[in-house]
Length: 71
Length: 258
Image 1 (cartoon, rainbow over the protein chains, first blue to last red):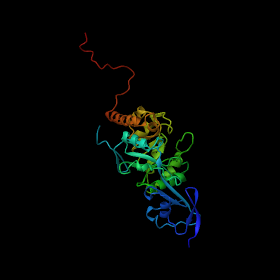
Image 2 (cartoon, each protein chain N blue to C red):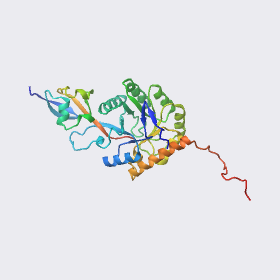
Image 3 (cartoon, rainbow over the protein chains, first blue to last red):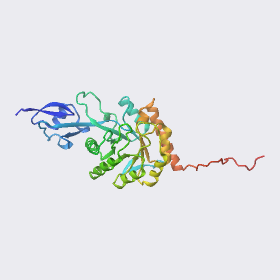
Image 4 (cartoon, each protein chain N blue to C red):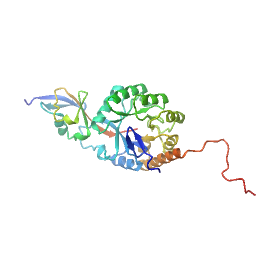
């Protein structure tokens, strides 16, 4: 069951295990979920389902946040 | 200052008519101090990847309380409709509101907007419930089209982003201000306080700037200068300036002269 596979997070390869959710990934990366948006394979994952959405082999995940910018 | 002179866009009320960007500052402390000095209650932010390798980096929102400021995500750096729509959706998912400052850039050197792409992206986002504030050219026809498709405000440029050239085409801006019946926020190109005052004197509802403050030798002092300039310009606009005349008109009476 403890099967490992590769995913892409913000363009970088990373190992993940079967059953890992978006919420798990954010915790592993030490990222607070309240100020980010997460996209899996170009689809935005609703904040409310971070703990339900599990990751699959080859998933391309983007974690974004706000930075200084403007004009 | 008239305290009830509030800016209202899509049912949201804003205290300040100076809106500021959060880029190009030395650090977050300077960002926070400059924004406080400017009195702005709307701040624009960019949507970018989180640095996952160096988690020690602080978050901008640790310095800007979203309860105190309206955080306005932009789609800066997007050159296609698809990218702009994607960034807008991500910004909404990361934030708390449906507001987006929509930019579809047409050229790297000028950073002028691709207005055809802008209208297309705006249509898609408005259908999805976004409140779209579009960064556009100083073109009255495009500005009206953006309103016709449902933008509750329009943000025409004064000059290229970061150029500091000031209001390059006050006559076009004046036409936009007279013909387009939504709040007009002059966005981009301001170099110094007099440029902001001029935009407001022309009748702009607000001014958005970043580089003019962040790039100044003393950003915090410049932020304060911009606050006064926007207030002064607004008051002068409301007070109604005298007409320009070619010849002198004496202020002192002739009567009673020796």
